Length: 568
Image (tube, rainbow, N blue to C red; front, side, top):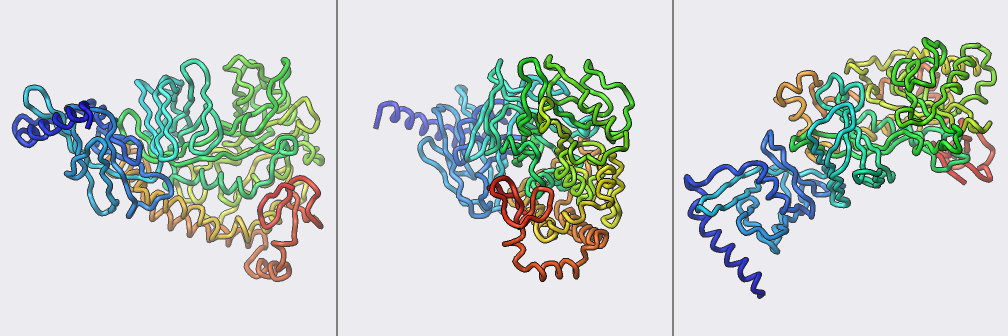
């Protein structure tokens, strides 16, 4: 035994004797939260730090993703050398070099006690209820948060990845942030001066992230599920011929968020739709090439209410997303203005040459399927891959903000699953005219009906997250934070009942599919007959990205088989 170890053990024994004498006496005081949090930095659960809600006085530890909570093995360890601070887990003393291992029982309560001795023979103590989650944890600390980026410390903690960026920047983001107490955040990672690209939770390597609160959504998952469905069924964007990694969707991972030691609930840490995600051509040699526009207000591609002005980043409901005028970059509204004039002319017979028709068609089909009324003329991206190239000057599309879908609108009102979607977008109307069919995407719907649009498949996408929220305990914590006695800041928030919302979405999907089957004349008998006639369809029927049948697989490029995209 080293001299250092001997001294530490002797000191620990003496302090334990003092604790036995004084911890229950009048000398014991409540340990302040700042000292409690500082002390808990030395305690690790499965190698990860604990976070505390100092308002409600409880703590949360992550045990790692994909674990079942019940029966999970958890290891507490003490790191560092602390002469006057002691810890116990449900009464078992935690010692440096001697882990405590427990098997989690969700029906059992767990407490971590912190005891700090003082030189005047007194003691400070705090006992904290401890909860566990299988989700990663995110901690933000900032003096002020507003709609402009400000300094913040960012920590991400999971069993697989721990990230600490003390010089990050955050801001409130999204329209609902103006009126709802649960805020979404924009997050930028920096080293203090330069951007810091990091691959968070298996997603892309980047510095720019979103923490989506999904505050208007009673399920907290409609946007995430919709993006995953879009990723799986939608046609590849036209620029993928030149840029195979181009994506019109984003990935996201659920986390539980703390802001300034206050639990804020379930958030989806997500990528962004931007130039990088779409692989648009960069500004080069003083020449504009790739352009990206976001519909932040209602647009229809027809009516121009104001002049498109290159001195303004916002015009006619669009916000110029790339290049960025606020960053001093040049912008040019003319390609979009030219497209407006084209649509307004009514002479749109060649519209398939002007737009990425397969993607736009799939986008309007998705809107019809999920009743995305708030996405028809808003909450979408439009872009040109490269305006200096004939092949790159088509107008592409990417969806955005799909919270108000699958049975509820942006005011949380229930939507009738047996109602038609009145799509007034003039680009959609031009496609109807081109195909001489109001439901020109009906065949595409039929192709997907027995794969991605199967009722069980759609429900399973939601069930996976409902189960994750329940198993991790996040559903209960989210409900308590934003529905049950969470203070004045919950008054504008919808009441949460995840079980009830799960039943509602299941029933809504069944009714919506039945309605669309009848509307598109794809009823149960026809669908079954179609399958009987093509029993080997999954193995032999091949389609291009627009849904047109092919006699065989292409020698190279993308094709669709069994409802999925493939690259040869």
